[in-house]
Amino acid sequence: MPKRVLLLVMPFLTLRRPHLGVGLLKAELNRKGLECDIRYYNFRFAGIIGTPIYERIAESTPTHHMVGEFIFTPALFDEVRPFDDFKAALGNDLRRYDEQFLQQIEHARNLSPAFIHECASQIDLDQYDIVGLTSTFQQNVASLAMGKEIKRRAPHIVTVFGGANFEGVMGVELHRQFPFVDVVCSGEADDIFPEVVRRLRSGEPLHEMGGVTCRLGGETVTGSTPQTFVTGLNDLPYPDHTDYFREFTAAKDKPAEGPELTMETSRGCWWGQKHHCTFCGLNGLSMTYRSKSPDRAYREIKYLLSAYGDFDIFNTDNIVDLRYFSELFPRLISDGIKAKLFYETKANLKKTQLMLIKRAGSYSIQPGIESLNSHVLALMDKGIKGIQNVQLLRWAREMDLDVQWTIIYGFPGEEPEDYQKVARLVGAIRHLQPPLVITRFRLDRFSPMFKDPAKYGIVNVRSYRGHQICYPFPEESLQRIAYFLDCDPPMTPETFREIKNMWQAVDMWKQLHLKSALTAEVIPSSLILRDRRSGYPRADYSYTGLARDLYLALDGVHSDSFLLEWARTKYPDAQYTADDVQRILNEFLAHDLVLCEDNLYLALALLPLDRIDEDLPEKLGTVAERMPATSVLS
Image (cartoon, rainbow, N blue to C red; front, top):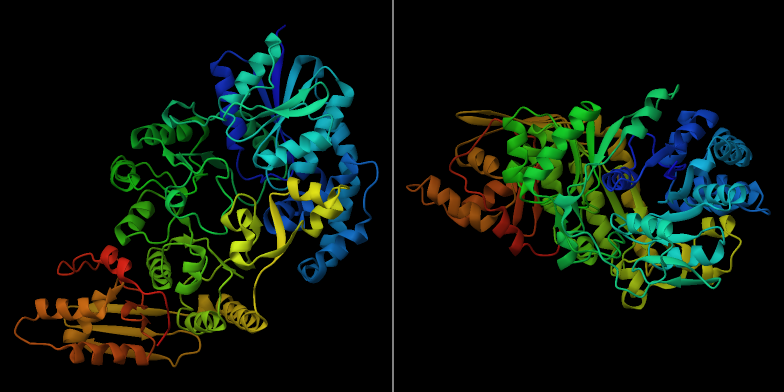
């Protein structure tokens, strides 16, 4: 009987969705007539330690704490660090972990060696000649432990490792450190892995293949041929998620959320090709943006929904293709397909674009907001201003669209006043959705900050303490293995003090936003703004005439000069002056009913979605280009 390929998904991958990479590899192998199985051992470990505990580790612990990695160290190494070393490594972050959770982590760690042995014993290793293990974030130690045990039981099996943790120098160093790692596929494996399978079975050498690391004469070697990347995404197969749904259905204790479907409609980042965000380590080996045609994306969405069920679709794209707003989303809407797509996007979407995402069935997006201060955003090279980020938050709130966003701080060049301004701003927008978390930037491999730390004033680059207690290797090896590293960012004590003040203001925002409201009631002759924001006096403000119309015009970001031009066009006989417009704007500002960034303004009250002002042309694009780089709440 011909041998088969086995692909393994280890803890701590999320339980709520299938792994896209292995689903694509299985589909491609099958298309080439190569039999392949996938086993999701993350479900099995969740069943042993308890699904709520598993999910808390997988979804809620900071990745650089390496909780999931530390749990599997006894299964990989003969000598491991005691649990007290783990608690010591957490430092001040230990406050995140209650005593019961720490006991659950320690219990899971004690069970990990038996778990690895049990999983390996349930595999009929005579069926397989190649076992592939994928590793991203907190999957590395578990995957390595599984590969080691399989190799011990069946030396004839070739172990092939891939995933984000094995890209570039990380994969080379892991191959050098662990002799049971036979082959490493770095980067996109759609074409590489099937060719590795073919060559292994035909006895052809691997050492010249681009993107492949193997052993030659006992030495670790990496192919000198330039690595290739997929250019025609339309030619990829539909992912095969059959194995995941079988495991999900069989699980006795289901995860709190899911299941979801995973797919991709693009790779790379069209923004990163022009301006690589300084902290971003994604697309390390291939930033070039490639996307599926709207028709291919449409057909794949229909296939996944029909094959697996009417579930949410999680897109792994780093950024949405702008063509989809005119060609994909309208088609889904007109055909009545509620795709419930989750996308990462830039935050400078137009309101019509955001509405298309909502009408297509989505209820959550992940825009790259990262900050509400324009100066900090410029330091990140985000290509957006703080007032635009607030605009998106307000529009999303009007549409009841969930926004998953984060505040990141600690960038070289930040000033104390940057965070003073944010702290003042968040008091006025308590009716909008707060960030999920606030965190200092990580020094991620492949990011501009990682590649040139001196340029950004970053010193003392080192591995995180989590790496040091998980791997018994010297520091220079740890720095080659780690996807993310620690450092001393150039942050002054004065700036850090204001960051902590901002943090407290955001914590208050999180506590009060569900009790806060700022809404607009629009009738033909007047506008009533009802202010019920926490921290503000309960008040109703009524506006008529030009004041009413100016406020409605500020549904989107506009400059004072545009507002004057618009007022003169709407009221040609009134001969309004700049002072007339500014006097009204100052009235709004006195009650924090609008946001002001230099000469730019935005209404903060939630406006009715059915209000369409035909007199107001869309000016966001030209306004954004003129935006200066400072932001205040007047």
